[in-house]
Length: 191
Image (cartoon, rainbow, N blue to C red; front, side, top):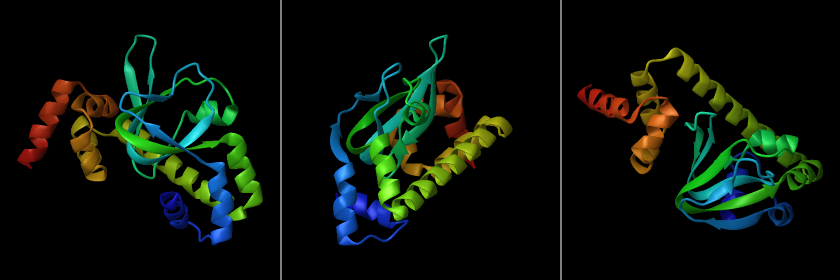
């Protein structure tokens, strides 16, 4: 739970008493490679904080094509947020790509934390705002840039992920074929 405290204290300070109460809202879960935290059509019970490991959030379209919305690693939050906040069944999947651990938080727990600790309400607002900004930047990049620019931006923002994630997933995330990704890699190394 020390990692949870460090993560929260990046945004807000906590007393020992506050943290002792806050940590009771979280449960620890070990996750294995290829294990799903969220399956399409299931109830979305938790929001997850990655302590370690690598995860992908994705959906499958009507043609069976996978679309990756997010990768998550240490200190990143993830779930099917529509299902979580609207208490609907999932339309997304959350899958573990590399063994790890997550902390699980229910919506009820999140709401109680925010009511009980205004500091935590601020913490969640900061995290949601940062996530929204990242999503907006990702959409803008997808709509207004070339595949080469998308690859270079991904490589710059996530240099460790590009080495740890299978190339087929990087290609899906960037919206290109595996063959195109290979060309982008070669072109980037020529620069």
